[in-house]
Length: 152
Image (cartoon, rainbow, N blue to C red; front, side):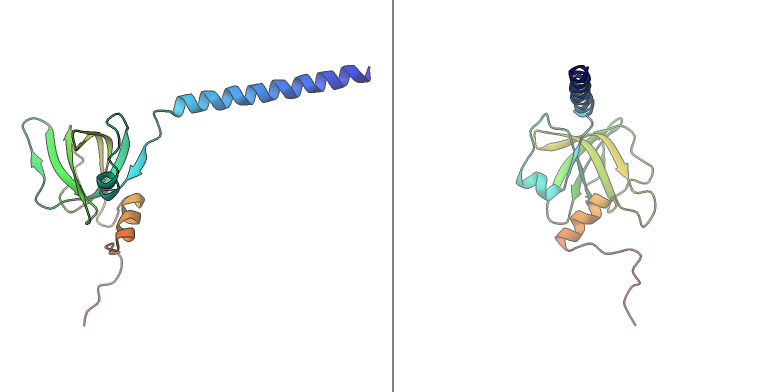
């Protein structure tokens, strides 16, 4: 009788371990396309990702580089004030998208140009994505828009 209970317990533990491994494998399989790493333009310039790698890039839309093509195609450069990367996007841009403002795009590199499938822009005058703020702080060029201007 005692050996039967012990055998049953071992079977239940093994079944639980197998179920956990299967669940972990299914979650990993489901998320394989949903994980996009964030990179700054400097990181992209220094270590270009492969053409099949989907990632997020963020920074400021460089002044004077926004060109609207025929149809819905738009090109511009995104910068972290250290390096800049050309971006091409086909679609409707967010209403608040403009030069000198923060943006984050999702896409991949193709022939030296970041081809975006999605563009996100700031939603008010003080918002900037956390990753972009962190990258600008790392570069030493971030200015907090909420900070009181110094002067006389």
